[in-house]
Image (tube, rainbow, N blue to C red; front, side, top):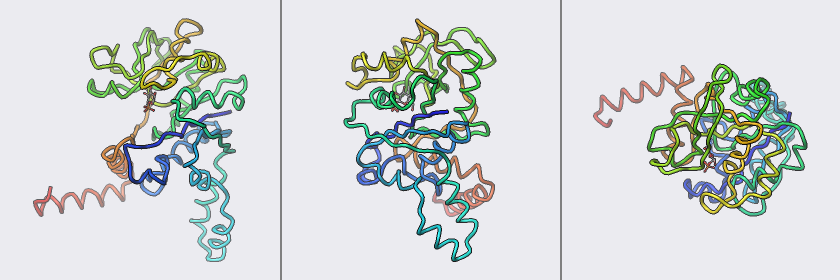
Length: 289
Ligand code: G1P
């Protein structure tokens, strides 16, 4: 199955690190953010992946490429564990890359994938949204899609102060366990205009109709072509469904978010959790916290 990962954003809120390095290559522990997303797609059954990039993202392509020199070196040194890790990354999926020529918004980035995806339903995973879960979030959505036979998007409730950062939906009836009909969707509404606190979480199962609406779509929030505005057309046609996915979503949008993301993921590892707890206890004992 095919997945599209838009990863062409500039990451200006993380400058200067993003001056020469793509935001998607920011490490969360010892893995770049984009690897979590590619793993989710691949383990979720989507191993044909198109990543939408721009001219600053070459290092991302290198990360998933075969590094024969390193393979040879690790083989010679007998470092089998490291070699296994390397091969695992290199064989995760068939990955293709396409450059978005201009930064015209998420809708435009998705539109770039039209020829690649063809007529089948496909997944979109935003390259800077990371969801850690036992069952890959995109697989949870796919299973819901098979039941409702219409587009499904991932949702999460956010604090009222955060609604301006997301696409926000209004929910109608629950049609399957945990799957709701969406009756309204708006991109980054003001707090007072938001229909709810249920936010779109960067995972979508869509079909070919989206391209028709994107092609004729007008620019929306921030003067960009927004995916959310085109999604709204599903509501009046075949329907649009939302599902709060199970998992831990971490954000790398700002330095504070990125730091928190590292802590959140580290705390999932018992060894690192113990180290962090011990270090925090030391800081407290020294009166530095
Ligand atoms: C995009 C989408 C938005 C969604 C968000 C999730 O916004 O446009 O609807 O809620 O991703 O992270 P961006 O974060 O690219 O501004």
